[in-house]
Length: 172
Image (spheres, rainbow, N blue to C red):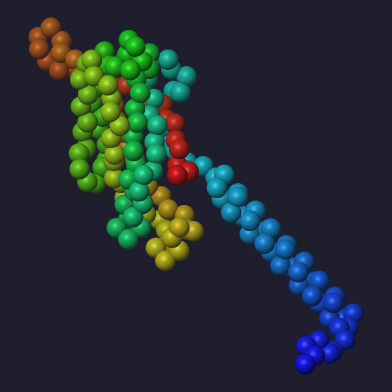
């Protein structure tokens, strides 16, 4: 039995070589698109002065995305800097974080002398087509409002806004 009894023509060789070249170019194009997608950073806008030496540094990490429910869980890792800490670990005044979490707690209290533990906030995800997940673009808003609380001489609680500086790691 002879499998290759037909002689291969030059025209057929050219077609095969062109097919391989087109496949290779398509492969490298798609690979380049995915590599550029990985490099994109999400837009995080916190309207505070990042040069202030006294602030709360907030690291944000996306821990879970549920496109069916439209929820995004974000881990907030705050660290006091400057006058809000004496040893860069513990607080030297009471601090309260207010968030726009749709589930769980919206207010996180941290007492003087304690460490600020990371906490998770769940926010709504919108602008995007569910059937295209994860290749479509989605938006989510996380609001953080941080205040220090202290009592004055008459016992009234005074709340003072604290600047927040962000650091993001959304490439999980």
